[in-house]
Image (cartoon, rainbow, N blue to C red; front, top):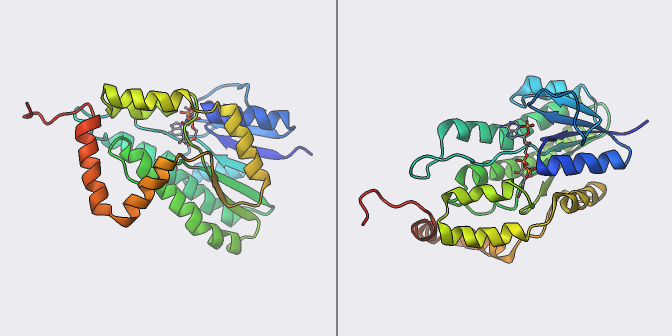
Length: 261
Ligand SMILES: NC(=O)c1ccc[n+]([C@@H]2O[C@H](COP(=O)([O-])OP(=O)(O)OC[C@H]3O[C@@H](n4cnc5c(N)ncnc54)[C@H](OP(=O)(O)O)[C@@H]3O)[C@@H](O)[C@H]2O)c1
């Protein structure tokens, strides 16, 4: 019998590439979306699910998957007048990036009666706070800490559960562009270069499949050295790091104090 994979965020850049790859490999692909649609080219069956809480997690678990990609995610596409996060978006982004994957993993550990590999899709944009994507960074960091913190607990409580984390870098497509909305023109030029050179989702999907077949718990797609250095800087000197963030905001954001000349 064909193996079953659930992929959340099937309509998105990475979800579609993953779905098409697993279809090619002969898997039954359940593609999860909030939208109502009869079918989608990247899956065998569309599953409409809001991914908002324990009932939604239970509904997905009834499909009895062998593999789950908790891939759906969101980034701040709208911001306030001075670049501040919007309360409703902060809540919905945190729910899909962190709370729902966490609730799903907990529900799976209570119900899985056969082996289930659960791979949460995080981000390399995680190791140090950023004024240019604060809600995204915070929710992905929470996801990473939860997955790595609970993986041993849940795997011991229910040996059928394997809870793992994959952290992509920028992927060629719309999401990699989203953090530009707080940047000034100079900042955008730097970011554009990185996005234009980002790998296509199909290439990242192949790397994720390799990870899925491996015995690794966590991996990422090419993390630039600058990200690693920022992480060290943040860990070693958080106050200096925050000073640098204030400096970067003045220099690279498109926002100025209302009373500034
Ligand atoms: N693209 C990048 O550069 C990049 C870099 C690092 C990490 N990642 C991570 O990789 C994953 C996939 O990224 P992607 O580029 O494929 O994103 P994407 O193209 O924006 O697709 C994400 C999908 O998630 C679903 N979604 C969005 N907001 C949601 C919400 N509030 N509740 C439930 N579902 C929601 C949407 O599906 P429906 O509207 O159909 O429900 C959407 O199609 C994300 O977790 C992202 O954080 C991406």
